[in-house]
Structures are given as structure tokens and as C-alpha cells.
Image 1 (spheres, rainbow, N blue to C red):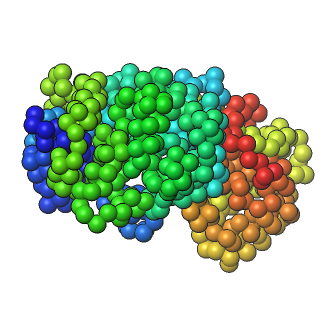
Image 2 (image 1 turned 180 degrees about the horizontal axis):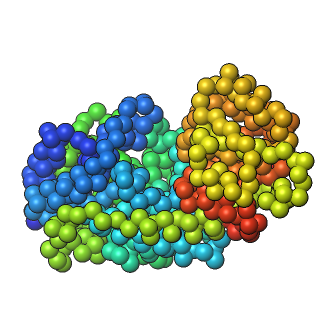
Image 3 (image 1 turned 180 degrees about the vertical axis):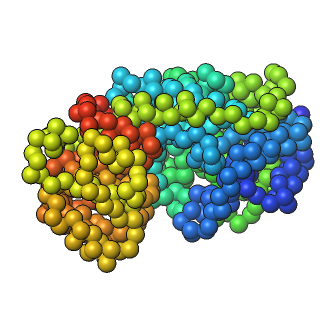
Length: 537
């Protein structure tokens, strides 16, 4: 390759599965003309993270998976150098693609006891198998961020929790699972995005920790990953003034963070990839096209993810970088391509013609995870036996944000029969009517299906519903099952008055079935809340 062609390898522009033919042809032109090294797939332009908060309508497409496969075949065919196809699939292809296997969020996995970390390995392995089956060899996951800020707007449920040892062990197990089936992994977001209160898709978070504090906590999972020869590390768009002579410089653009801390002090010589360069924390810093790409490369990134100015960026690097530095980054990327097996053998594109996911295996794995992660936070001492023994205790079931035809209620119906009520929408008037309907019941078995995983707007739980819960916990004997992000517990008012609290994490059918089984059979709850903050009690 010429020097210019080698530089082209550092560019991983974003591509969108559900894009126009015109955009697809533009990507093909980039591949042919600039010898780019890889692509990073997203569902659609509206679903890309920087557009998420604008609430652009995401048009779903049940044929997305087949379309993804077809695009990968198409793009590889026009590449002189095999492309390293990447995607951010933290909880599986389902994070980006409809009708594909979905695994639990990292926060759910973080509720598993350490003795069950083999289940994390299995999740990584299954995600790797699914990715490879569509032609992707590089997963930009998992997070190594320690979520030690409960108000974090962007990490939260994507982290294994706030325990540094658990985050370290689980992240490594996840990558080992992927590696064992030939898929590369990536620890992110160096030097740690957990203790932040700003979404780096929209602004620049600032970490106030000293280097000593970072070494004692945030950096621990990355250090363990380096010891385990992790494939790659992604640099986060976050500022650490203590590492930049007091300046709020994004780590992605900081030599002191990448070259001094990561490379020299921590001894990492693997692939370093930037976080998406279209994110608002860095995308508007420079007027001249290509300068951002050069600054990110100059700071120490080998791969430029979501680079939007490929020709200009290549030219800037060609004009300013040393040949030695270009060779270093090129060699690191080449090693990853070799490890992924896309250079040593011809890519088998014909194997991508059929979709054949093992959904049954996914379901069994998810049920095992549910058995070991569902967490009893407050012991109600109210079981099926208790209800049967006390005939005067009038029980009703109430489902919030899902109708009564949910798996949890259906699984309880035979063994714990009672009237069932639900609220999905309608606001204050509907809730007032609901209060009247349940007024004669002493005990309420409540299932809360949290509408959104992100904490924005109180996880999309209406203020009227929060007030309803406040009053309910004051007036009734309540046992609440929470199917969703456990950080929602912090916003539920008066939760301390609940007789029982069970955190079930996911609304998957397997988690609902398992929660019902544990209640009916009075089984042990093996899960551990992934964070210590219990102010809700």
C-alpha cells in the first residue's frame, strides 16, 4: 500500500442499514477511492445517538437483518482490502437490528453473583456468534465504565455497576466469550465515563478526579483488560483537567490521556479507537474539514470511528503525521484484522445468505440469567402460602405500563388468582378511576414495566403515575416487581412503605416467567443490586 492507502485504513465511517441507495453508493465510492479500513453500522440516521434526543422518528424495518447482510456482502465486494465490519451491540444485534436475539443489559448482568460469571462469558459468546453470522467481526463493547454516579444520563444501565472488581471481571469474561468465536471486543470509555452527569453525545462531561483517584477506581477495569491483552480500547469524549494541566480537553484529543497515560504509564500497545467523531462534544470544535480527524489521530487514536470527513482527514494526516506513527497505527489495525481472520482466508460471503439465529438457545440463556439476577431488595414475607393462609386478605394485581395480558400475570393466574387491573396511559383521570376500582382491596401485587431504559424525563414515567404510587404505598399493602432499569427505584416516591420490593431488571418473557416462578415456589433470590445507593429505602 501507499502511505495514503495506509492512512485510509484508519477511517471507519458510519453506515446506516436502512439508508438510501444514493448514500450506499457514496459509501462504495469511499471504499474504492480511499481504501478505508472498516465501517461502523447503525440502524438508521434517525436512531444514531446524537439524533436520539431530537426525537426524529425511527422507521422500523423487519427486514433490517437481511439488509445488513446484503450490505456487508456488497461493501466487501468493492473493497481491495477486506473491511473490518463493526457495530455497537452491547446487548446483542437487537440493539441495532429488529428481529434478532437480545440479551440483558449490562446492569442486569451486573446483578449476577460473581460465582455465575460464566453466564457473562456465554452472553459474549452468543453475541459473537450472532455478529459473525451476519459478517461483523468487531463489537464496540462492552463498557468498562464504573457507574458510580446514579444520575448518569448515558451510562447507567449500560454498565455492569459500581463495583470495580465486578466490572473488571465481567467485562473481561464478555470479551473472552466473543474472542473464542472469532469476534473482537472493545473496552470503553477510557479513562471512565461512569462519574459524569453530562451525555457526551450532546456535550462534554468533565471528570474532576485526580490521577490517583482514577487509578484507584475508574481505571481498574482498563488496567485488568490491558493485563488480559484486550483487543481494543475506546477513548471517551470526556475531559479530565487533572491530566491536561487544568484544561477541559476531551480525552479523544488529548496526548496526555492516550500517549502518556494509556500507552506509556499503563503499557497498552493494542488498538485505540476514538468514540464517534460526530458527537456534539467534539464535532463542532474545528471549522476546517479534516482537522478533527487529524487532531484525534495526533492525540493517539489509531481508528477514527464515525469519521465524517474522510478525504480531508486523510490529507491532513498525510500532511502532518510522521511515517513512523502511521506505521504504528497501521500495524495495530492489521493485527486485529489478522486476529479476526479476515486476511488469512478469503471472506466467505456466500455463508451470509441465510438468516439462522438460535432463538431457543438465547431464551434458555436469558432464563438462566433471570434465575440468578432477580433481586429481592425488601423481603415482604408474603408468598403464595401466606396469601392462601389468610383468606380475609383481599388481593388485587395491578400492572403499570403494560396491560393485564402480560406474562407475569398469566404465570401467576393459576396459583395466585385475583382480580387484575392495569394502567397504560390516560393520565390523572384514568388513575383516579383506577383508585376507585382498587379501593376495596387490602393488598396490591404491583408490576411496574418501566417505559424507557434511559433516565431522561424520569424514564418516561408520568408525574401523575409517580403521585399515584406515592399514595398507593401510603394506603395499601404493596409488593412491587420492577421490570426495568433499577435506577428507577430512586425516583419512586415513598417506596420505603412498600412491604416488598423485587427488582426484575428486564421485561423479557423469561424474566417475567422467572419472577412468577420464584414467587409461587418461594425460591431463593440470588441477584445482588449492582449499586449500593439505597436512599429509596
